[in-house]
Image 1 (cartoon, rainbow, N blue to C red):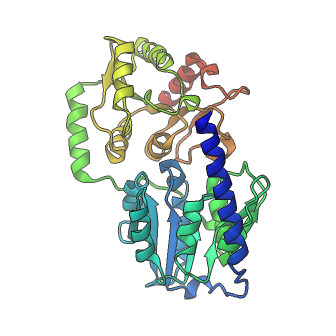
Image 2: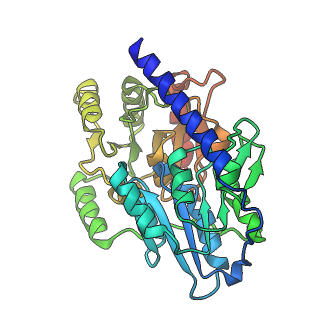
Length: 364
């Protein structure tokens, strides 16, 4: 009861703060947006989850392609998106956004009064932190999402004074990001296709040694049975069922986990027992996971940042829960299989369905 009251109070304070800021912040509608070829410095903001950042990479690439020679691109990203940012934009300035007020202040210091335009690709639900990072750049031209069909925040149109209204909540995240670039007159039909990122050679060497140590004669199937978000995952028992089916079909299986999922992996090991043909990967970092996925037949997983990152280097068979599939399906350059039932329950997807998809991929 106390927690519920606390959340209501917090929600009320936040609502008051948003309405207060929307009242005191001027429209600033007269500020002009420079033509894209005259912009000398641009800040891109996408400090949230790994998958969200990956789905923003094509838009950042297209933006960079249209900037004038010598223009400076700065990317403000979160901890989960940092490796991807470094892989795709190694020559650009990257600012790391961590949780906490001290880091927030440092981000403000590093971005204030430095850019011709700031583009916040965070879509919705509305993020107060992301909006404040945008506002405190003190940039005259601020591009972002003002509102959508289901999300209307009075502060958004003030913060994103050069933003757009987007009334399609189910549009794929990459298309939403391209839509933001329309304010610059950029032709999004020329959007680049995501190519395999450059994985560190030292990491590749380590992964090669691990892979050779297994002595496999067939390409393995990677599974990610340790996702912590319960409504977005197959239960571990279903992954064990799938691993048994793959083993019987002569396909080795390697189980991987992400950062902070060690306890989940230990639980999975107890459930799976001594299953023949099932191996465990000792590395958690994204580049290590991607280096392994390059050697795999495919990846079986749920809707997650790991799904999005590994889809860049391998086909995926992904089981979706209640997420909007049309918005969050993977964008990797392979033939991927996505499964989602009408009830939005991951466990409604049978292991046999996914196994058939894996066989189809392996036969290509």
